[in-house]
Each structure stands twice: as structure tokens, then as C-alpha cells.
Length: 206
Image (cartoon, rainbow, N blue to C red; front, side, top):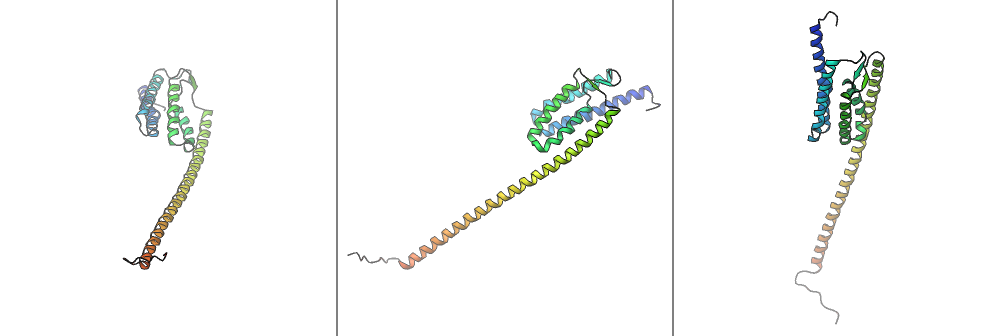
């Protein structure tokens, strides 16, 4: 911003870091906990994400870029690009397995955020690559959602058919029992009419 003072620039840098902590550390940590249904096993991972994010931003605020266009360590905003790509495959792998994948991916990204490696700053032509990536990821999410919805509909239809078959079997069993009871009752009444109480048929064998 033109015309700002050095104090305003320093204040803006700290505010930008605070926003980055919330967007790229707190939000992914909550995402991990939500994917793991807030299981205690996912708490260490959430803590690692927060800790590495704060360390990463603190280091950047002190040392900045290496040569004007190169970061030391993976930038935090790159984590979001990787997570967006992973969500394309969520409907294909299931909720439980996807939570494990997110856990592992976030731990790898957290390690890269504080690793002594050099990564380029996204700018210039990189913006076109990011835009293309966003379009492809959006298309992938749409396709994955459509596939997942079709799979859920097919599963519901299969379950509905199985339920109808089970009900038909239960109805047939109940009808069979009712028929057996009716036949037994009718046989008993017929026997009473043919052989009244106290009457014994004569023995004609002699």
C-alpha cells in the first residue's frame, strides 16, 4: 500500500501473520479433529499443526524470504492446495480411511513447513497454475460428489429391495402359521363331531 508508514507496515505484517495462523493452522487443526470425530488420538496431530504453523510464521516474520522469491520451508498457504486436492477423493475412500489420509497428509505438510528446504514464492506465472489447479480441483470435487451421490442412491435402492424381500418372507411365514392354525382348528372340530365325548367306536375285529 502506497503512503503507509513503517509502523503501519509492521502492524500489517503482524495482522497478516495472525490471519495466516487462523486460516492455515487453526482451521486445518479443527478440520483434522472433525474428520477424526474429535477422537483423543487426533489431538496430538492438531497440536502439531498449530505448533508448526506458529513456528513457521514466527521464523518468516524475523528472517523473511531468502532471496526475494524463495521461502525456507513450505509456505503455509500451500497446505490448503494439497488439502483441496485430497478432498476430491473423499467420496471414493470412505470417511474412516479418509480421516487417516488427512492425518498423515497434515503431518507431512507440518514437517515440510519447518523443514530446511527452499520453495518458490507463488507469483507471476504461478497464479495461472493456481487458477488452473483450482478449476481442476473444483471439477474433481463435482465429479466425486456426483459419483458419491450415485453410489449412495444405489446403496439405498439395494437396502430397500432387501427390506421388501425380508418383509415379504416374514409375511409369508406369518400367513403359513395362520393357515396351519386354521387347519389344525378345523381338524380338531371335525374330530369332535365324528367322535363325541364319551363315545368310543365298537371293536369289530372279533
